[in-house]
Image (cartoon, rainbow, N blue to C red; front, side, top):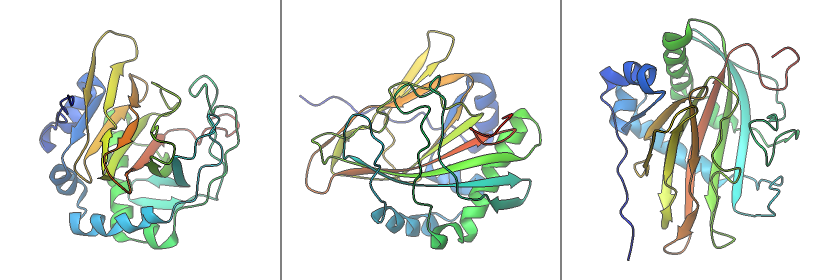
Length: 248
């Protein structure tokens, strides 16, 4: 018997910010993302090839081989986007009990990807959403390209389990799924009993999370055929500086 896949609770573009303010998370369809961000779905789909060239994540403490990734940092200030000097990804143990406290150096995102006009448009629009909720300010953005495959039989999108990231907002964009089952998204109130689960299946579906208010995770994936993988783009927005900066 196969378990039912629950569809994402996509909100209308007009209700995105009110819903984020009300419950701390909201999901947008690819069409909703394109409408609000001004990004072309045709152009976004052309990015998908960039996920075929991700180096392996050599820091997995469970010894897994199922994750590939790249990582770069940016500062978004209104309509301006500046790439920050390449840096390690760092989280405190309080937010990532498995991989926290480690200086994790990943290869940067490709110049070809981040030079795209829609790359800037996406980062600027997400920054405007964050500012609408928490006030206008510079946002320190970490961009993560992930590919989770089934090299080990299963792949774990969040090996650290249900967690917060230690930022202000998290944007999870599904880039693609191929020959997999699982990968269910679960969102819980950080200080309450309520939660919701669903599976992102459409490329460029978006889940936005207020990281102070909710905890999230994605369940493991299993293959249903050859070449199984799940690709995501995760963008975290933090005020005051990048994690690991003195005083931030």
